[in-house]
Image 1 (tube, rainbow, N blue to C red):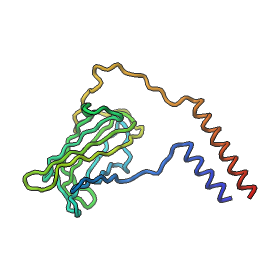
Image 2: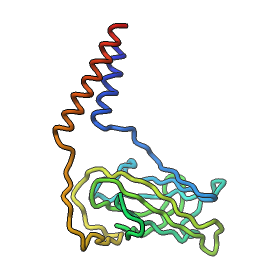
Image 3: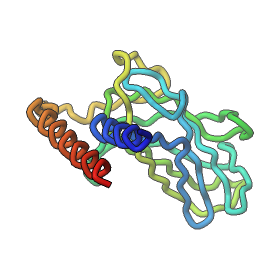
Length: 196
């Protein structure tokens, strides 16, 4: 019986597209690393303010506060072309989160659900020594509330002269075909298990 439940669980997760969430996202360069955390629960939602912060550290684990980093955060909608201007440029401010004090953070309101790239750029101030860095993070934004008016970020209209293209979702027949295929695979596996 437990084999059937396990197979059913795998099948439901496959069909529904539910994947385990990855909590903090860590990126490193030669001598700098940063862990991205987004509140609430590392699950940003479109149209809702998301608090993002970067636990920025030097090699060896010493924290780099925002006062020691000339940092900039750029947000791109994915996919984007090289040289394309960022969709958002949230203003970084010094925040304290968990055990970190004075690290870079920002409030971001993603305009719609989908995939985004966060690019954290940094170079040392006079009081610090580390190599300039670029850290890229891929973020998936879930469907959320209607867009609220952002108050701490600069929003650029990069699609001003582009005709809006109508996007369509997955056709219902494709979803049904995938469901029938999955059911066939599940029945085949169940028959194999019963024969053994």
